[in-house]
Image: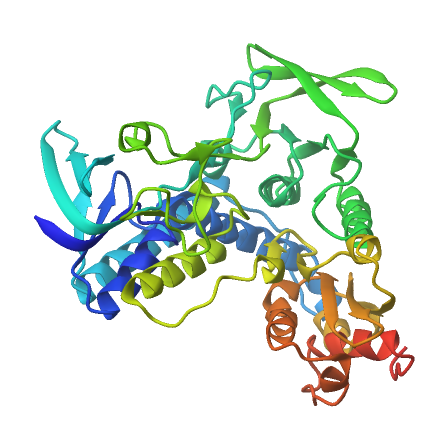
Length: 462
């Protein structure tokens, strides 16, 4: 049972690495303890977007008259919304299974443990232990919901993202602890469906990694939607009682007690590196992550790690890029390290947010002289026709050379627009190239050019 490459974990890092390895001629296997596709496909990115689509459609139906359409009273079946979401995940899971067969990749079900001598021990669901060997072993076991001592999850009253995807009934009220992408997306979904939602964030701004203007705009929008937002606040203690939960929240003004049916803990993730045999093999870790070089080699030859188990942004598209780069380096192809300063981030609430590169504050702190431009979507013909003019596009250029330092977007449709800014930064294009690139009309993409025109005092539609 010898392979060229064995990948442990079949999430967006693992299955992509395995497929690329097979394409490059490696005899490849994947070890998976649960479902092909990992957390992203089964319990994260994909099923959450299915839930959010149901929320978007529900919102459109409620506002149908604004588009000249007649409607009856809008209603929904919560269990069927959840059922559709699970169906989407199941379909994608089967798709990954097809890709494994198509690329002649062996799928080994069970819990893997790395051993010295480039060996892997796999224990299946019946307790049978099998051993495999490989010239190269890639660890891509992903992460799980982080559990804080003062916020223990019981899976019923205090839940993580898995339970939030499959609640048997819609809660009347929910406290969301943490305002990163996971917390905000669930807050939007449940609030849209009628749940009373309160978001508690420890830092001064929600979605704290985003540009300050985007954060403030999104907070105002969410409040208009009926979501209560508490920043500079922390949940100190949780008490479950009968049918609900009490949360004791420390704020600048003192302690506040909140009550709800459910508390969703969205305070980050913890890497799945336990019980993998890392200590026995001698693979170095730090702060709960596996240490690797620019090409994902660990300190032990023949062992690699990618995705959420290593330091860096815990994003599906990052894990996929790391997986491809890792196996291409093993093959000996001419590759270069990933530029982690050019990774797009997206949050799929409504309005959506998307960004890449530096925030305005970080660019100032780095000493750049800036040219900053904004284009409000209310000035966009396409956004107006869509009946959805919330948001803006913000661009940050280096005044000296015209380099795009950062791009920050808020508005529905922006998660599909951000790739243009990523490509511009990757190609080291300047503002001049954007100003002279013809964008199709009417599209939301024109707003990127419009923001650039604004930065350089050439605004046409403002």
